[in-house]
Amino acid sequence: MVVFCTNIAETSVTINNVRLIIDSGLVKEARFDNKRRLPIIETVQISRSSADQRTGRAGRTAPGHCFRLYEQTDLTRPNIEPAIRRSSLDLVALRIICLRLDPTEFPFIDPPDATVIEASLSLLKELSCIDTNHVITRRGQLFNELSFDPCYSAFLVDTYLEHGPILDLLATVVPILATPGFRSDMVGALEEEKQAARNRVIDGAKEHDSDLLYLVSIFRKWCASGSIDPITRSCQICHMRSAKEASCASCRAAYSRTHLLNNRTLCIIENLYETTIKVLTNPHWQLNPGTLVDAKESDALGINLKKHFPERHGQILPKRARFKDATMVQSGFHAVL
Image (cartoon, rainbow, N blue to C red):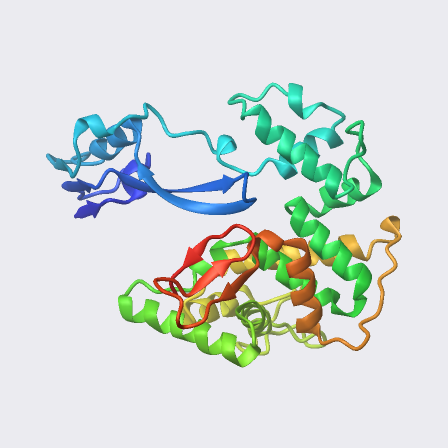
């Protein structure tokens, strides 16, 4: 067996029959850009510890070799950077404040940069989650209960208060946005399967006027695939009886395999969906949602997404634009589609 340039060569699990590791010296790292307030994925050089780990995977159970496609001097980092220094600290800061502690003095094992914490505190003030003295507000307590990134919670709550009837759509959209793996998991192992998945997303986005609404439709079809009849307590597909379960797990798993979906990720989204509905309809928070007047669900969703995430607002450029097809309006990022 040959392992080519993947992080599986860094796991502590021994994989039998690995004889050769081809190490490119590169890794994709998720990082939060605090200036642009955007999550990004960068391809960076691995650390020396990662290189040693990759080498150690070759020949665990028999003689093996590791070929490195780089110079030893290219390894400038002794270790990978801790995730807390590469992530958004908005929700972390909110939860620390909910514990009546000061994020600026919290004893992190790997302390993040002070400017990152200050940026998170500034955002929490802007979202009215804390007051000027860094004391949690009722709105901040609600956001902590929702457990999403505060920006997602602000979009969720504010849109619900304005357009109450689309709660079910909101409670589906936000978990999908907060679970980016859902989009990347819609692929297969073969290139033909990957291309087929991409084509389905493109066609579905055209049909629903939005790739996001298309993803919502995928989730809802998955939920329906294992529905239990409330009277007979049996699955409507395989007819197996279930006294307690709300859905048929085996039918949902089969549906995921057939449509190249990640069943585990969909289960996570379902749990977040149910929690969101439960929290927002809890009388404790005394939320008084408005009504959807003279607006389509998709329009209300789009307007509020643009309002709460201006840094992620993009536009398609005219065909005469050279070397780029789209641009992020606020940050100036360009993309070729």
